[in-house]
Image 1 (cartoon, rainbow, N blue to C red):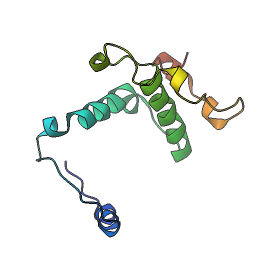
Image 2: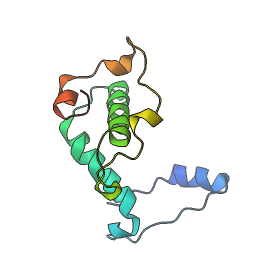
Image 3: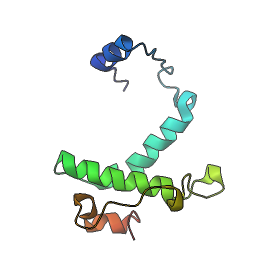
Length: 111
């Protein structure tokens, strides 16, 4: 379903941003974003139960880094968009973002 956040629209209007909408039921009008959302849903969200907002943030950030630095993209000749050499390293040992559940490894998100 189409969800329109009136508070966000109001804020965007206040800062001078004009919003554009795709035709309902026409995901091909925004193919890049639809593809990303599908990948996020299929590769992470459908396989996880988040017990806190903090946990969701950590796991989604780990997935985002994997998506951008490791995961092959067919549209890029099966290369990642931003190889690891071009991105900052993961947080230092002991950081909360390193305490991931074993399921992340099973999904290929960490090695």
